[in-house]
Length: 375
Image (cartoon, rainbow, N blue to C red; front, side, top):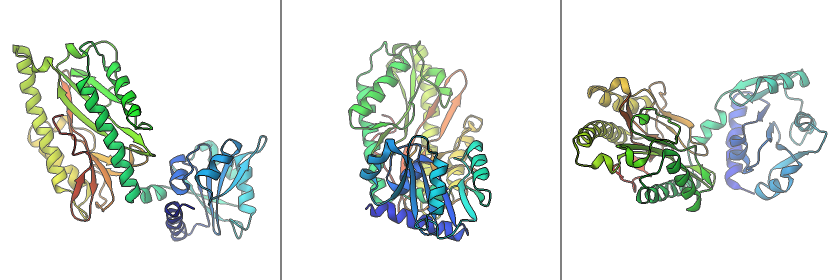
């Protein structure tokens, strides 16, 4: 039995009871995994008023026994439907002591087709759309999760440093992406957190630029790389912007580019550092965003920073919570958030500086501090 997942389920049941629900259907694979330890797909988790049941199929029968032997499961065979399994669970007093009347359903993960099927099959049940009930639990990381994220960040940094030391002048953005993602896996990552963003020069003004073939490293003045490794189910997320060898050359054009880069980079770093310095439990998330946003605006670049300052990371790269003008929640110990101010100038380029920050009982720890801002 996994004590950690059992504790999570117990906490979730309290949420369900407080919301006066006598059932809850979890359909988001990330949330199913968080609550059970099962890492397969196409499976639902039923919370009745007297028990919990995983609804899956024969592809995952043995995997369920290995990954979450403490969780009861109903296995769908060929010709059966998942909603048929749900019907069994609802009728089984081991999971539901009585026919449920109000059942929570994940609003953001439930398709219209699934909702229609549920309402047709279970006419006497009121399905209540709910938002972020599991995600709010995921927001606060336990010691094991923090360690997993540390390891994902370490793999991310090691792969990046290798790339920086082994970049050929004829490498394109696509070449750098492929090498970086290969290195993250080679160095122990299970996967990448998200498709890596690599952009040269004016393409770096696109915050989520898709790497392209064409311009090469030796032809470019600067590069922005946004990347992260996934390890043991958790992710890292970092961004660095830096001058290439050409940007460091002593020519009139490169000197002019270098001066502009230094000016913009200094503003971004000031915003980044000021925001992190202000982070501590009890401070509103949007207050931290405002510190960085005001710093950039006061330097005359306010119109060129359009996204939020940061987001939660965990089992997914955009986990619950974040630092933005509309997010007024309070920082709390155990949150892990990115801090990533940026300035994006059309026809010139963009600079973003991103680190992963753990909120402590008193202050914060920058989990990615091993990687210099200028790396």
